[in-house]
Image 1 (spheres, rainbow over the protein chains, first blue to last red):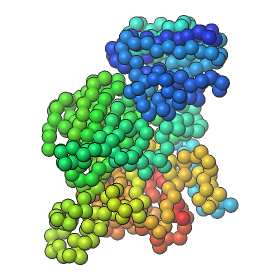
Image 2: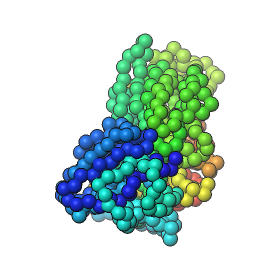
Image 3: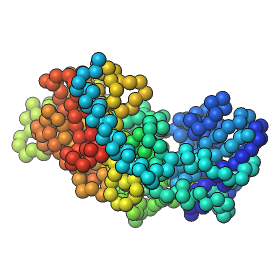
Image 4: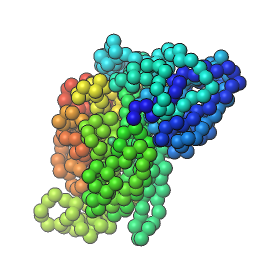
Length: 101
Length: 419
Ligand SMILES: [Cu+2]
Ligand SMILES: [Cu+2]
């Protein structure tokens, strides 16, 4: 089921201060995990599970999983480009970008 | 000041590495960053995760093509350090942060429990060259797990990846349900499924685990493999010395004592083991364009990872540089737990320069199966223990590599730096 391993849309554009809601519309678990080196320098790290670093998120994968039907929300307070991925499906192409204007 | 030796060794590594990276990234190069940044999909404040709606953009197909390389440059992923991996043993008592583990007694047995997950992860196999791996706990090779013979391995496995996987142990396992093959027990585990494998740690030796889903060659070469170490129990060796030698002659008291001492040096719970510098190496390879042949070879994933980078010539390598020789103390005994995970090629090999070593095939004996050799070969899943003594050698660089010259030049070339 190639369709259940992606972020839709892959790139989303929002205004500073807006909140992005990720909803798991598939029947398997995913994470939303920021690439630490692909977020603006002044921005805080974000990941489902509330981790403070990419390392911690990768180390404790299961705590960051978003179950089918569940949501994860994050409010972006700094403009810039944010790269993020799903830890279990990174190499299956499950990566995305948030552009904050 | 770097000596001439160091400079020229660094030069050669650099040239080979560049040639390898260029051959891989040529015209089909696609940087993940480029893919990430170059799209103009209309924005919104809601993102579907794992959406099953039709995609508005067609980039997904392109992105998903095999052989997705990053730009030529430095290693981006700091999650895997081949030098840390060398000595990362997970015993239940202690181990890596990405391997939840504990040890406890149950029914008179020591249980060493580990949590394993399978994920689809991107790994870096040469500077800027990424590989779309499938990995246990996000790393290739998978975590090294270690127990004492007679203990129980309890591995709680959850498959989070896109494809169905298993864990198949090369141990003497008495329960067919626990064999980790599609035809037995729980069979393959689909995305989201879990199963707890239990294996008695036997026989003493160095062993191998891997995914046994079909097609097998794909599941192995994508990265689902690792090392199991079973330490001999010195008390059991004292009682049953015959089980640990490939020798039909009499077991004298001297021989028995020698075998018990050897078992202590192999057992991580004994002080004798601290005197030995132990390293885990998995010979692996990567088919980066998925054509059924390997483009990159390595010991522990990184092409030339134990090659020569920048040094001041006194063993001080440039900070942050993961490419450097394996530094060893000439007065310490060196032990390598070696296995071969290479897919597609029939064999792999391990050769030391200016040095001979003792080899214990499968590590199941306490006397060498090959004494004083400088080259051994292994087929896939074969493994063994290599014992090396550099105490006679002058300090400096000593190469070791696959003696398939092709493999060596495509990444499986390494150095010990004797200090
Ligand atoms: Cu996912
Ligand atoms: Cu598999």
